[in-house]
Length: 230
Image 1 (tube, rainbow, N blue to C red):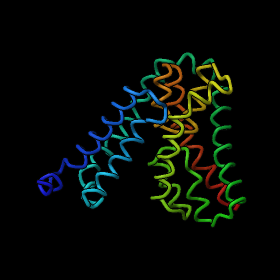
Image 2: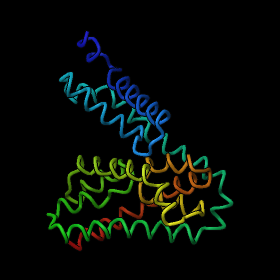
Image 3: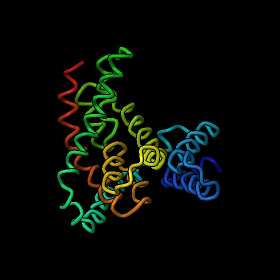
């Protein structure tokens, strides 16, 4: 029976969706912020693979089809941005300043950590693109001599933490402006954080979606620049 499932082209997809639905169910029932559906699905998927001794390549042969949907799903974030375009025009200077500040904070923090914890150069550049979408971040890491697979893991962790901590951080620092919330979340925690921003409101989601694209482009140049600092 196990061979039947593992040899199915849809095994990876079904396992991923089932684990995510389990995480979403727990979040709905218990309501705790740390019960992020994506985080739960990652933990459950790893647990299933370990318990059943299924090789990751077998799982990924089916799960890769979900990855194909990542790009069109990201592009769809342009829809709420279009709907909130008037707000964007009124706040364009603040939006640009917020995104640039978020990027400089991100790469500057990694530089500080590299100095404090004595990173190797390859380790340093691996962490530089931690706050942008996986497709761009892995490419940047590889070009700079980092470890793309570790970069992917760090990007996911960053996004999940941003998703979990977005609302508490806004409350602690009394950030009430929806544009500021969206820009902060999007520039810090890319698409995973943006899913939380969209739950918070339409303006937050639109601004966060904008930040993903703009932050991704600017971070490419910022990472190349900061790579020479250490």
